[in-house]
Length: 457
Image (tube, rainbow, N blue to C red):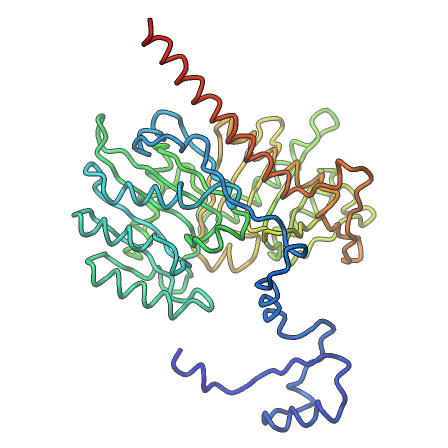
């Protein structure tokens, strides 16, 4: 990192219409070979600088302010572990639902709860306005065993992560840096608590970083649960991450990479081909940032060739092309462009009617599946599966924010044909979150009224 500012320039990008004289002068001043080191691009260079435009006070060019709601089940002021234990797993939808009153609250209460014995988590990226590190330090000072796996090679955040790691170590937190040769990209928190019935494990598993800033801008999912088997799997995972010991580890539900996830996805795609028939048509739906892995792409082509319907919602790189005669005629590939950056990963398989949903940190990319420690978890609760189904259906059927890939790899923006279709999927998800919040408020008010009537009798 110290050498970075003095590193030699290896590449210069210029717009295609730059005059040859200016191009040559710029290359000479930077000591570059104009023939081999200068690259022409169609788009504008340094587009990141356009973010400054978003700070201009021009209301008519901005979306209406969005304030995340509290998760309906977390409006209760009771101990969050009691809520999870009594109401079952909770699906968190950011930025539609608040990161502060869910994930940060989970860590805050763990840090002060006298029954909590240990907290373990992975930290890939965080921000100065995130209270995550403060709560971890508070937990250590309150006598809890705290272990954090920090990824020092998180691109562009190396310096910040070194500072966080030093600060946590000074507070007595056991900080490790993952397994040699693998980036730790998983998003997972494990809390060990001495419940009334013995030691219990509580988990948060997410698709996004523990970063308060991006939680307001990125579309992500997380799950809060005390599932016993997932808790055991998480213990296995942290034993691996904090020791690096690669003995044969047994996972019941979690699909971690690099050992299991890719093989599991390939097996499930193959199973979907096998179960596909005219009576029970196969269906695979993936939502992710990128689809780049050659083996996954090939397996999807084979499934599509056999007639399995495939829907892909991919924000960035995608090696799969739909609509190729005799190969991928049963497929759709779309990308969603809206006010929030789509960052969620969902994997769905129809499985002959025994539907399977998974969420996690991994994209279908070679680096994620083979060179990183990722975590993907099954979602089995009926209510949570219905929420995931609503998200997938809302985005797949979007006629306002969706760009559909053509067979030649180009994209065409869908056009709404009615007023109802003119509302983008992200606005629909905002409205859905607000509706859930209002319904929860009505339920709480109804309970209070019934309690009051009983007391008056």
